[in-house]
Image (cartoon, rainbow over all chains, first blue to last red; front, side, top):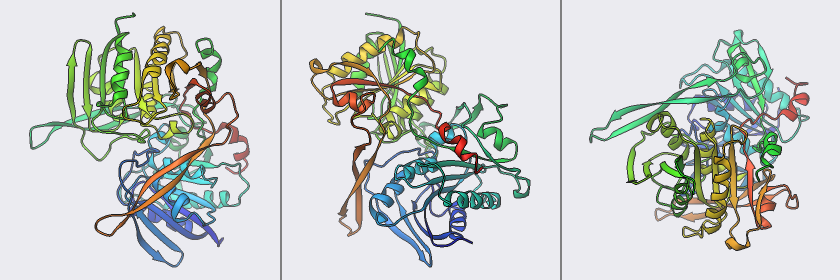
Length: 256
Length: 256
């Protein structure tokens, strides 16, 4: 196994999650691990930052090759705290955000705290991987995610991929031996449609839970991440952050 | 003045902000206003959704042509609550998110609760405008933002622009009469670098405030939103949501 790399980890399910432990397991094969992860679940926090609350940083684990802090903030706060403050003098080779409990394929990339952190890491010119397993179970089986995650980390650490590099990696929730391989994919078009479950609290006030389902606008498109996952492949989507709709520029220039 | 349009409003500074009142002022020139806005500031909440907390919806204003609800959630929650629940049977012509107190140009589009809501609205195939003034002051002067916002709303309501349409509009913080006009722009490259201000609480525990400065990677590029704003123009960037880095695909296909 390769040694001597320095890998920064974060997560959106908190430093206590099984997926975070799985990410440490991947990273330790390649070298030393430093981490800042939220002290409570931060799923669905997107690229949110904490403006109105003070941030408390706490060392929660220190042992040979593994140093973990928790922060009462978002995954993006964790990345900023790492590279602009706590670990600013460290030379980090790679960032892994995850392993997330739940899919971050398709439009989930926009809502995902895991991918928010991975994108933020790329702003510091460090290659980053957002790694997710399409299983929300707290006790999910990470065998396939660890196997393929390790393979992808090894490829990225070779160091000759295009930069800035931010990979959105999703692993299907099937037995590891059934996974057919890796497919480089594009983000599937489609959106969530929500159902609000209405309840009444003990004080007689109505409240709602947000829940919904993803509607895939192109289920037969074989070059998409959703197709890869539905067909037994690990999907990799390289991510960029320029949201400019260049294809609309010419048409809009008639108005503005 | 044009009448009979139905405009949905939201905001990330809460329904009590001066910018929200300014958005109502714009929208009322064109017709009826319905709104759901957060009950507390949600700046920097990006496209976050609320998974772990129940959502309470409360009617806070009802008068001729203006109906406003508050929600204890994110700006994106407000949009989902509107179009998947409360106002699902309404035929909405336009969504305005704002007017934000503070710039959402350049990479701010990714952190912005205002733009998170505008992007979410576009997922419902409704033209949307995220409107921001580059002034964080709670009592900012919205004259220019109202004037140019009105002009842009009028253009969009003509209804023949490309769809889905999501515009990131930023107005410079200068006297209205000094604004030179509108420039269709692209998102400026650049990132925030943070400074964490360390304090000690009354219990002797250290904590941090997140603060920072934007570093513009291309300050002389005249086709960018930051250039437009710095030179006295209102910037408009059309926004899309496919984060796939297509330009890296060929190179990455050697590895995966």
